[in-house]
Image (cartoon, rainbow, N blue to C red; front, side, top):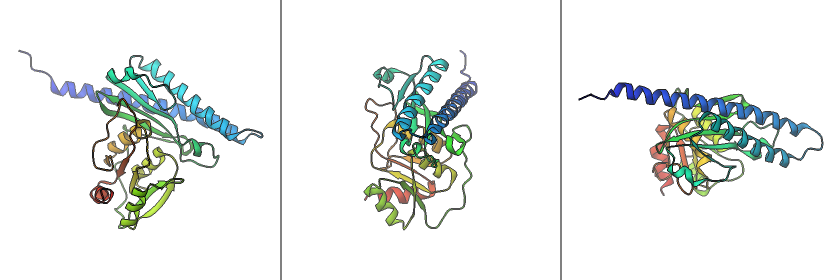
Length: 263
C-alpha cells in the first residue's frame, strides 16, 4: 500500500496558488496600464467623460477576459461587464473580476481611488487575487499582502463612500466615535485597511461578488478580519452573485464592530 505524500500535495497546491496569484497580478496590472491610457482621453478637448468611463469598462473587461482565456482556457469567468454564463456554477475554477471598480473616480482625472479586481475561486474557495490601483502605481495581491500594521489607534478610522453612507455604517462610526475617511471604490477602501491607513471598512449598501472577491482574498492574506456584517462567511460563485454587505477590519476591532453592527 502506497502512503500519500501529503507534503508533496501541499507543496503542489501552494505552487499552484502562487502561479495563479502571479497571473492575477500580471493581468490586473496590465489592465490598469490600459485603463491609464484610456483615461488620458479625459484631458483632450471636447471629450465626454461618460464616454471615457464606458470605454474603460468595456476595454478593461475585454482585456482581462481575453488574457484569462489565453492563459486558463478551461477556467470560467464571472465579470461585472460580461454576460453571466451559469456554466460557471459547475466549474471547479472561476475567475471573478471587476475590470474597473470605481468608474466614477476613474472619470475624474485627479483621483487615484479606483481599481482593477482579479480573483480566483478554486473548489469553492477564494485562493488567489490581485487589486491593482493603477493611478497610485501599485498592485496588492495574495503574493505579498503587507502584514505589518501601524500601532493600534485608540480611536479607529472608518472608511466610507464619498456618495453613500449606509445607516449601519454611520451607526458603527458613531458608536466607536470613529474618524470618517471618504474614499471611492470598494477596492480602494479595502486596500486602505490593508495598508493600515484606516482600521475598518464596513459596507451594507449592496454589492456583487466582483466588488469584493479580490479585495477580500488580499485582505485575508494580509491577516485582516473578513466576513459579512453578521459575522458569517463570504461565499462566492453563487447562482445569484448579489453579496450585499462586507466587513474588512483589523482583527482587534472585529469583535466590537460585529457587536455594533448586530444591533
